[in-house]
Image (cartoon, rainbow, N blue to C red; front, side):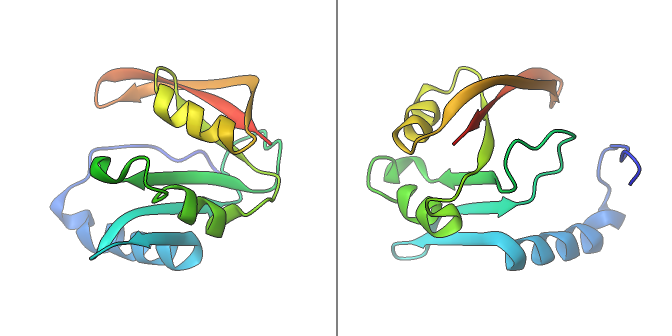
Length: 128
């Protein structure tokens, strides 16, 4: 597999982006609902060179007004259950870090850094 290059998306990419998005959510996304979708969690095998566990929690997002209601816990439980898994969390995101720690994740010392919309971001890996 070759390392992908990254470029700004154009309007001509819209169809391809939609196709990838649809395939990805069909494969691995769970949603939390309360009068509509309020959050989601997605998993996968991880696309990192070093995978400390076979399963990666690739994304979990919940609307801010539902923080603390279980809207994050439910899709996390559905997506990975009690399985060994890993994830990356943004440095300086204490709410997310506490959530993951309550779910048995610990930092293992690995990190990744890259620019996100021209702002450097550091992601710290957690495993369980």
